[in-house]
Image (cartoon, rainbow, N blue to C red; front, side, top):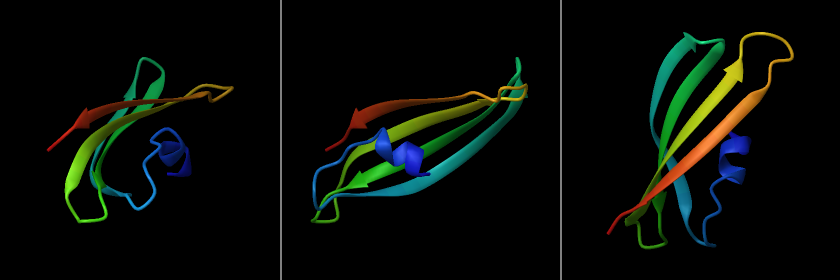
Length: 74
């Protein structure tokens, strides 16, 4: 999950909470999982949601692709 957190820079005092996982399985030579996270501020309010698509090739050289989309809330 460290690779996910590197792609989601958040302000000091905020934290990320994983809210979901959807394992899509293998398709077109890639194994894809979709993770969802909420960004929580110091007051405990959700200020943003993130969707992380984490795909890895099922064939050598097993390359990995991580894409992040952010939706502001509040």
